Length: 333
Image (cartoon, rainbow, N blue to C red; front, top):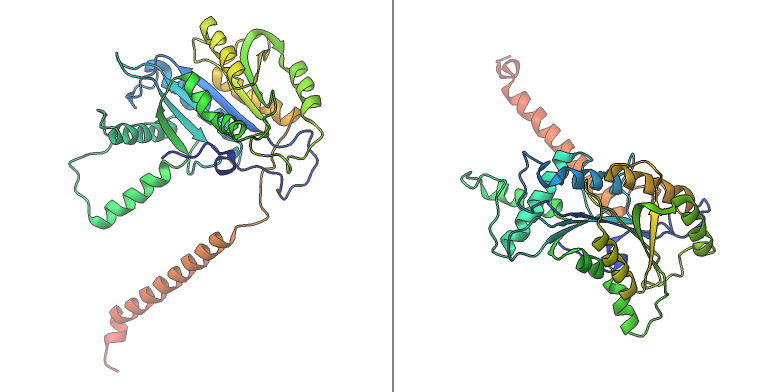
């Protein structure tokens, strides 16, 4: 259910993509952080408005989805703060480079979140509400199929008991580790942006960042020097002053740069802010191609041929059985 903090094993970058059109900046990592302060990890699937879990689900859709594909260089972290006394907040991190079979609607996203959170709480022997029927009896084969499907559904979705600050430290821990090992870590390689109506206009900020980041193709970037763009925004209540102070403190600890940026004078939904930010980043900095490969890989081709062979075998078996049961074939000549 978890995954490594190493970007090379978490994201898919497009330096070697089939689309060779020049881009202003090399491929970089996008991370969105949305604190859901009133949302409980044990939320009710039939009432997503409680704690505004529905806002988090829409933010997942806005951050990871494009028209025909996922954003493989993007992830989003939802921090569930509506926990009981003595409990730590729970952060769920979804990676567009690893997650599979995710659908862009609230019901599907909430169900996937619920399943992964329940699995995480079960592994820690914490009480949880099982969304499956425990009294249902299934065969061994069906049990194996459900286990395989559960493993696939939890791929790319990580749950961890941590608050917003620890979630950021976990995401950028590979940079600090690389620095401890003696590798040079560039100051400002992590840009930490708080969306705020009183901030700098986003177009002027991105134009300045474009001049700073342009001039490379990304192929020579080491893991620690890979550019990071972190965006912080609140749920329906927005971020508070203490949240801004916390983000600035985190930026200084990870040697990042803090910026307060405004998308415009109008108030937008959190999910809309993410969509607009993705559009601007695509337009002004870097847009990954819609397709990263010319065609399917060898493993996909192998599985396709195996599926075709099984279908032909079943068709032949079905045709033979029909001949045996045909009354015209059973009549004496």
